[in-house]
Length: 349
Image (cartoon, rainbow, N blue to C red):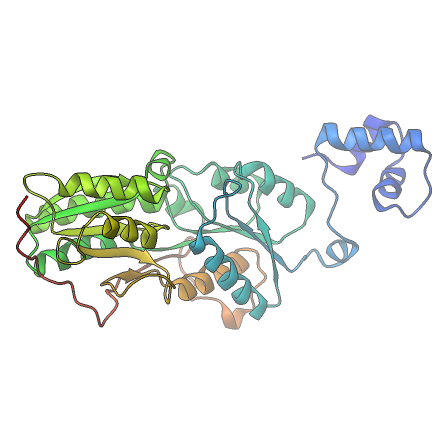
């Protein structure tokens, strides 16, 4: 990692001059200023974020890394961002939101500049490159989600037990009498990116099929509601159509249900729908048997783990000491009040 001395040597000035250029505290000739800034860019030097950081070695800022594509909004990401901000504020921390799809580049910049004391990483992939990069940099992180065995030994994480959640939904459908179940998994790009929740959900569907003997047909979801609805209609237009549909983490689910209703699919007569990973109190979603994400509990837990890793959480708030990083899987629960209806007699085709 480049230092202020490296920048000074590259630009042919004293380290104090580099400091003056970056702080703007003294007037420096335009030529010198240009040389220094060019050296900063070439070396990738990141000065400490502020004089306060230099004095205390603490920024009281928690970075939240949420890789996302411009123009694509996911309500669950926004809900977690708010809940993590609330949890951080309890401990006197602000939150810096990072949305760079690359992830590694932005985190390296934050780690090198002292903009934040620790980071929470969302949208965790199997063998996520951000974990290795931050471990090598000695920058503390905690994961909201988990991908593979390496994460279970290197850094702390919390997650919904997605495998158990999808398996529970299929088992509940089987208990209600459904023998043909469809599973609309995470979308293709999430599976292709090997996001942990997507892979664990697929494992849960396979496990439940083995355990119950129920026929489980898997189809990937899609961000486009019309495409997702078309895939469900294709499943229904077969000799042995499913009578129950388990849906994982599908953002446009209300729109998908509207598309299905418009194409004369009767819900729940033709299809009982069981969403997995919904946001508590989500607006626009009809009353369905479902498994919610414990957003508030997960947000509080991952915030505490990140601040503990940074040595910024008072002892009274820390979790009990254990060997190695703390990991926590939240057990899934079916939201009470709306049972899964039994299969109805299918319509004559």
